[in-house]
Length: 71
Image 1 (tube, rainbow, N blue to C red):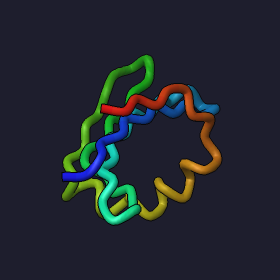
Image 2: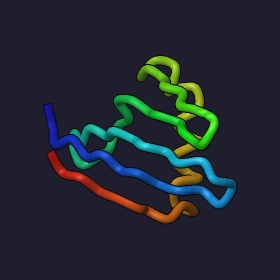
Image 3: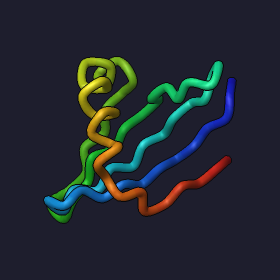
């Protein structure tokens, strides 16, 4: 398995996204996504995430990265 990176991003509407990415062949692939705000937390599995990953990863470029953790 490649390098795992956890990124916490904050969107202007108050939602925080904590994303685990698996770096394989220089491509970061989503493993798990957590959607969280003051009302609670939603977790998606990788299979569920695939359906929204292209839209979300495109949107990530517009988010401010709050934290990046290398494991």
